[in-house]
Length: 427
Image 1 (cartoon, one colour):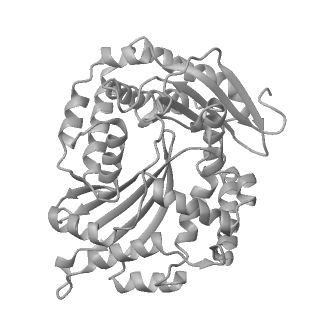
Image 2 (image 1 turned 45 degrees about the vertical axis):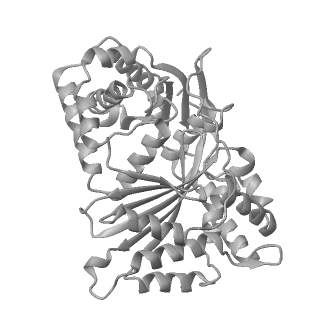
């Protein structure tokens, strides 16, 4: 069990307090949840950039930055993420603790007040957001969407997921589409914002050397803005039968081929078998000692990189490799052989022990980063888990090779995506 304190505020915000004396700052993260939907995702991902342009008290980005700087270099950042079939918009405030600043005693209140201003009192014009802000942020957002193709590695992974989950919300790009972006106006974005703030399930995480009752009282006072009944977000679709493996090839002007294999595992962080799956993924492709790195890259010399990763709330496993275009068939064959080896319990002592050690270290490192601590708590909330580091290490240590082989039998290939040069994969 974690030591997280929980309280539901009067306006429906879920407050999570992470008391710790390890850090000299207080980290505040406000997270608003949305269901991934084509009609909302673009506006939802554009919105935080527009809100950060200014607010009633600080109507320009420069004025807002100056005010944060006055609070001893405090930072306010926004981000958009995807966990399962949820789109998450987060506002993160990092502020120095009062106890390290003689004569100060109200920094958290001041920081929360700025967060509230940014969130609830945007700069308006006529019947919507300030047109100049929306226009400029749309230009930047267009570059973000278009920029994906410039990172061929990230592009190939995203395209594999889009093809693999083409009829599922998870296949939607978290930043939306250029088509939807073009039709967003200051008025339409403001109308979405009003719904977004009123109905989105919202979590507030506060991590630092803080007193529970004081923070509850402060947050209820400062973040008391009006809200409505929150929307229901459907559960993420996890289990899906694979009728046949799909092979997708896309041609672009690239020098190096990008091979991505998408597998369905049927397991998420909500399942106890997720921990054997985590070890499975570690043995397969998370570390330098893993099978993909050793056999595909080092021994066969087929890949510039080769790794695997899990989508922990969707039940997917992705294998990604950068290869010479002409070595497509050879690389595909040797990757499949690593998958088959794991299903056949072909796991040596070094692979197993080094993976357990590597995963243990990852869990321990998370304790030294307040952002990762909050992310772990968020993952636990979404999965219905309440795990501290000790319990996670205990679950990890309980995994056996038989457990790994058992979950390996559930891993099923769904989609093979290959980004190749103009001329095709077969050379």
